[in-house]
Length: 124
Image (cartoon, rainbow, N blue to C red; front, side, top):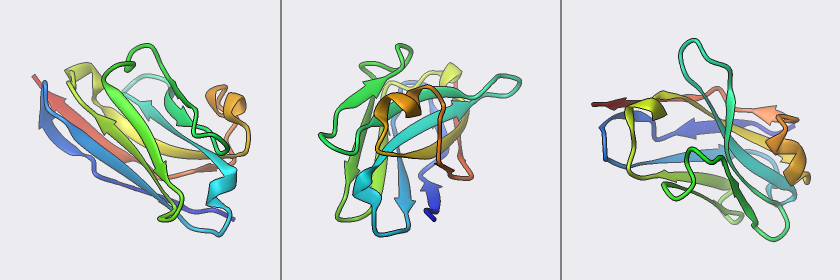
């Protein structure tokens, strides 16, 4: 069993930055691909970014490419999402996700564990 706890959300002005953290329990964190998804009001949950368990290969949705950076620290069992140049349309609840090994699977929404989410609000 893996538990994921997000933190770092909040209110920021357009153009600003936030860093989200996802703390994971369990001793096999390094075997999980970690990802971030988001869900805006009235919209479906969508993929944002992922980082593979093996080589740390990163994947991004086109909407955030060049602005967001995903990273992980296996020693701290923590994944991060650095968000720069935020836009009002980035406003959403951001969810951390974990998938045992499979990087491609996580991008398709095949998730083993979800966090409860953290709210990011970007004002114009």
